[in-house]
Image 1: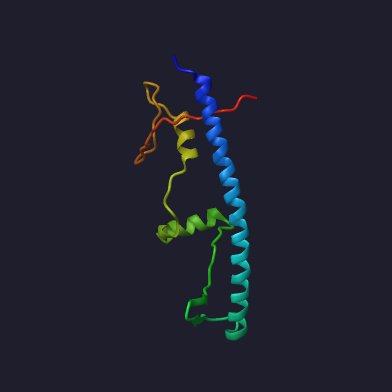
Image 2: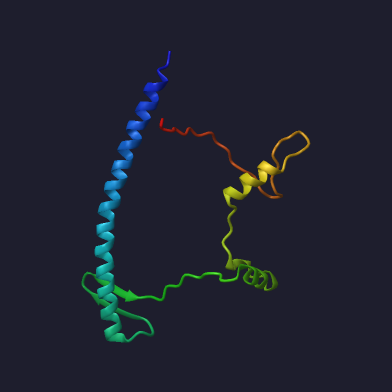
Length: 138
């Protein structure tokens, strides 16, 4: 006979060990990220001092090159207006294609066929696999 409680305790022990390792990694990684940010701030200051704030700038040395690049993060302030523009201009390449799991789960829960089976929107399929979740006792 299987000792289910032993399996659960073993799962908790391994899960706790993983969490401890992740926490340790995250703490060490935060320190390294902070050091990199300090270096990058200093490098950007050097580039701005030597080349101004417009245009491309780079400094090369025997170990490599550091350079300034214009990085943007787009944000839609009005999704309805933007999507209407995308559709009118056939500019769907402005969007990333993906289907949200949350939407499909909700859709399947509320849309069923005559046999009571969940249905999907046209052109959509799902890959299913069973996974085990373990909860701790309170």
